[in-house]
Image (tube, rainbow, N blue to C red; front, side, top):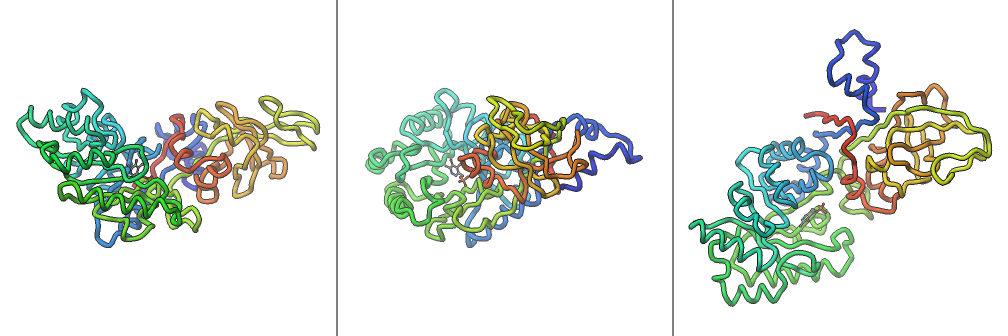
Length: 388
Ligand SMILES: *Cc1c(COP(=O)(O)O)cnc(C)c1O
């Protein structure tokens, strides 16, 4: 069990004056603990693979659900000077949390009508389409100054970025970029977590060829997994997200990243039920022996996905207690028959995510990916940032 969390919970027994945080911890149903030192180590570990090339941090979706305002400054302190968010509003919020000596890129570019807000805030849009290029260039001409941007080209994912036809148009008519300082040309890999997938080499070749048609600028290509595809894929600026947050960039190999997140929830109550009794919605669990059930204060509204119904376990002092029946909105029920009764009482903590049950492992049980597990984590947790 996480000693600092359990220590905070037993403050009643100590003589230390009760703080507002103690009171909040006592009220909380569950704790989400985020290890800032592990985040820093992950950033430095990824950067060390880049042979001196720059390493950005992707902090979209509130740093994959973990809290961009607290986490981005940790990367900044570690030397990061390039940050990526998806939305303009995320960029505006992030700007408040970071010093001015770094660039914040907005992956979706400005939505129509928001270009002036983007420029005014000094955010750098990723321009994905001719429409975005025209709008950004138009604003630059109206303001009478050149405006910085990243230009994204599609290298084979067909999601965002200029298709080859538009790149050819720009090559023939470079004036289309008038007013725009192209700080970098970027693209995104679709299958980087599968090193043997032929898409990787194909996208790399497309990226090289299409980028060469545009004015010379630094290149950005690799996400977390892309970094592990080797130097050919790394270019001038890598853009890891997932691996910073401890997800495995090479799902087929042992995870080289440090686990960042711990999720602990409190037991609300326990009960003994006889063989034949049922538990939870739709009576999905039926006791086949006299059974002790603990109801735990975390549910799908907290991001403990409903697809985990009847799947996996929580850990009580390292021992597994299987999830019994459906995941409810605010609670789950776990079978603690095989655990000592004194280990599972109202207020006892059980571990749902941690080094022994990583977000990737939870995702595998839920039939999804660690990205979705992290970004689903809800807003009701008592959040703690360790080693700040
Ligand atoms: C989300 C995202 C990243 C980061 O990807 P990870 O797989 O989380 O490392 C990089 N680039 C773009 C364009 C993205 O959308």
